[in-house]
Length: 307
Ligand SMILES: C[S@@+](CC[C@H](N)C(=O)[O-])C[C@H]1O[C@@H](n2cnc3c(N)ncnc32)[C@H](O)[C@@H]1O
Ligand code: SF4
Image 1 (cartoon, rainbow, N blue to C red):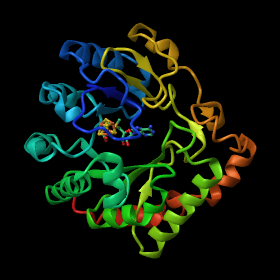
Image 2: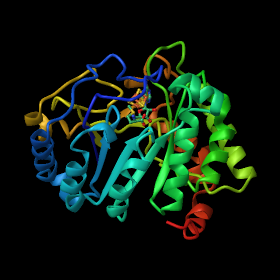
Image 3: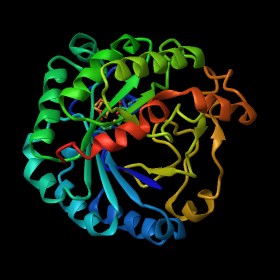
């Protein structure tokens, strides 16, 4: 199970599509609240049973003045720690991350080729993210790319695959943009996108694996069931991108019993009305994407990645 802790709203970028762009960008989670959240997470029966993964995110988590203390505090308590970053402050934090690298994975966001990414994320950000990925590769820190796909950047799949190959970014997080209906892909467009990027990865024999449980991949939403999000002010919600329902820390054990929903019952509902029902999902899964097509092959190849 994943626990997504958004330790700050503060950010050094203003990406055009960011779900957090209208939040109070000055708000950061105090260290004692972070500790309290970790205690609550660790007391959950699910966390004792399952692999327990902590995401440190934001805003930009590397901007938090207590980031080092938070990482050190959480490190012994979790099976894995994922740092979700835009990469701008990666070099500055390299020694710290390297010290914890046996359990730490770094995700760097890239949203297109250089021109499209920079239009979305700001001038110069592609080069900075690329440098961060290269540093992670050189230092054998496990890492991957996050590519959030909308109408604006769906043509950039090949570029992302090439960048992933050049930087040994194997498990990548390719998920649909959620927000303005004009920019969101509908269900059929998303299917076409996935097949195209999958065909390309296959054609260059790149072992690109995607989590089968990521948003838009098995057509079930894992919020509350597969994972949960904590905001900088301590409020709790299912998915960071969908803040429709907010709970308090005390509600935690109760809300975790919700079961996964079909995507067309979630924040995707407006655009993904055509998601098939459960009966057809098995068939759909058979046809789909890297984890099926390249999965077995890729797992063997993974042994050769110099992490
Ligand atoms: C909010 S950012 C925080 C971490 C870091 N600042 C970054 O950009 O990676 C976490 C992830 O959320 C994604 N994201 C932001 N807004 C989104 C939206 N409206 N729909 C889907 N994903 C979104 C970003 O692409 C990024 O991969
Ligand atoms: S860097 Fe991350 S948090 Fe900052 S604006 Fe971009 S997506 Fe949002």
